Amino acid sequence: MMTYRFRDGMGESLAERDFPDHAAALAWAATEDEFETEIQRVEYRGPDGDWRWAGPLLGGAAVSSPRAEAQPAKCHSLLTPVPTDGRTSSSVRIAAD
Image (cartoon, rainbow, N blue to C red):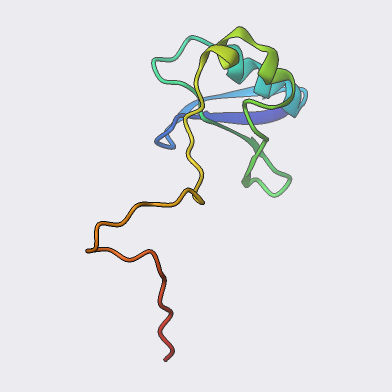
C-alpha cells in the first residue's frame, strides 16, 4: 500500500488515503463526491518521503467514470496565442549580465 494525497485546484490538501497502486487512487479521485471542491491533483509519497505526481486524472481508468466524462476540461494550453492590444508584447527579452 502507498499513501496518496489529494489536492484541489488551489493546492490545498483535501485528504490522504492508502491505495494499492496509482490506478486505484486515480479512479477513486475521479469518482469521489465527498468534498465541496473537485480533486485536481493526486500525489503519492515517494521512497524518500517526498510527494510525487501520480498521473493525470482524466487518463487511464479514470476516463471511463461518469463524473470525469461530465466535467469539461479545466486547463488551458500554455501555448495558446494571447492577443495583444499594442500595450503588451508577445516577445521575451533575456538580459545578459
